[in-house]
Image (cartoon, rainbow, N blue to C red):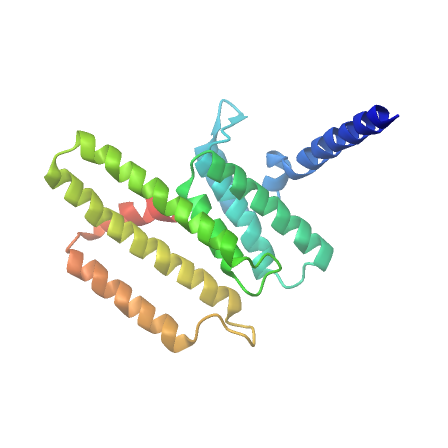
Length: 220
């Protein structure tokens, strides 16, 4: 009798897992939730011969865009918002497993946000650590194949990429909460951050064309 109950229990788990997966992972359906420009960007970069490329980079893009829809839209109901958040986090977690460092950073930010029901500093720390670990591994690999001068240049560009990524996140936080009573950043803090960012860019002495190229890569 016990064996029968165990078998039934396992079957239920399998059916539930399949059901959850089919609800949460439907890329083409979930893409319809994005604005037209984001859909166009996804199909341009994440589709080949009408087949969607489920790379870490592409799933991270979809996941964070879905999350920001819920984060910025105050008209979404509680249950619908929770479903959207869960869906977004699922995409980001899959993207992380596929090696997306940016997905790890995004999850680190999500779990560090006190306004969300997902607030969990332990998880946040783990995801940020994972992102840093990935960066360290990449730099070690570069160290084996590239001359010291080229490594220093890459590290300098990494600093620029980090600065651009952080200022973009700050802009997102500020825009998302500027109409709320509890602001994530004050206007003064936001302006100071932008001034500091401009100083970093100026100090690196990189031309505007190179900055545009780095910005395009880091934002996506």
